[in-house]
Length: 248
Image 1 (tube, one colour):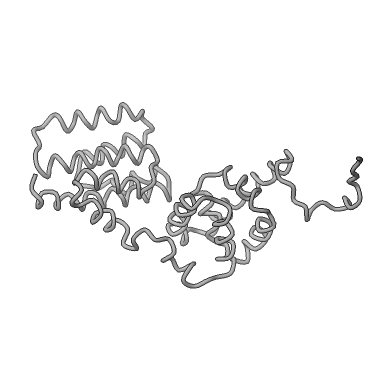
Image 2 (cartoon, one colour):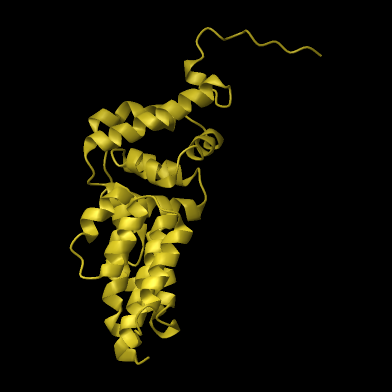
């Protein structure tokens, strides 16, 4: 395959990353509207199959049979292979940056970094987001949520963070202050925090109702951990002074 044919396939990678971001932000069901009028029958079919909740093995078999039925070659064949792999990656719930890496690798090492970078114009650097360039305060509706969580120690915050996925945390944090976001950085691994920041960049403009719903989910998890005694909120322990004794 010539370099020119590979270059013709780069827009297909961009299209699939757009769909991956859509699925991550709005859910798989939102893909149907995104791909409804796409010129590729293969893409429309793949999206329809995963929206309907079909088994990944079945989806892969149907897409592969569609590709094998005609004697495609060159850019046409590569485009279809990219679509099939992208659809399956989206169905697995892979991070969009991981999907970009998978698809870019199919173009060969010569184009790998160039295509990955083109999918993420900011270079994938989460610190280029406005929340880091221009520190901000929490939204009024999010102050109580933020204040409660910022009283947790690092270990408790880490324990709570693990109870929800990274996307849910990004959405819950979209209404919080820069200080809160930095405190989360001290509670999780750098790899997880980078993923959190990338997701945060995608949800900053989401409706306030979605942010508050995500925060409510975090609070429910926190209340559950407190109820089980896995997390102790010392500032809420009223009347406990002097109740603990130690014997030799």
